[in-house]
Length: 224
Figure 1 (tube, one colour):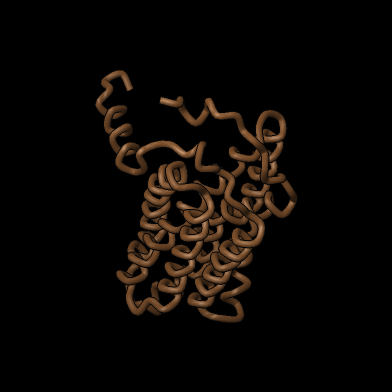
Figure 2 (tube, rainbow, N blue to C red; figure 1 turned 135 degrees about the horizontal axis):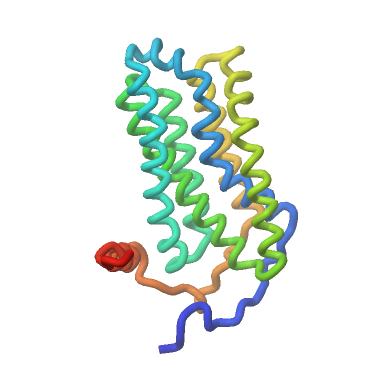
């Protein structure tokens, strides 16, 4: 064996620029915008789709289920295959899910579309954080993480106001069209400003299967 990826010296071949940090912040802003931006439109969704408030509320739950699953899949996938393609695919899936939400003919279609949107967002968010760990270390890593947390703290305050602004001039569906554009911007900025940050010699793991096996091993630990 040649040792784990942590034994391989890091070469910071990808410069940490403001564009890179901004792009990473965009990927990690998915949850607050995708959850808080359309909450002001809940009554309109309920009326338009002829459903109940509890089922509309379920669209929040299913988004987070998809988001959690996306992180579970995206992390191991990017560890084994590299960062760039999982990041781009995650953003694209998030965009497709948002478009499906925008054209939803029923509440159950919307619930399913939210899972897809969350799944793509979860992949993008997990891989984006891994990119930062790839290119930064020590004090620099701490500073970047602090900036991302600060920006992440602003998003839940901005998202509801943005959503309310949209529904004052349009319908709740336009909120999801806006989120689809947001996801498309994720893909475009990732394409332009994020190169592959995990070289082949640092890739490791058996992908999702090994990660699931590891989770199972932890769960079987009585002390845990």
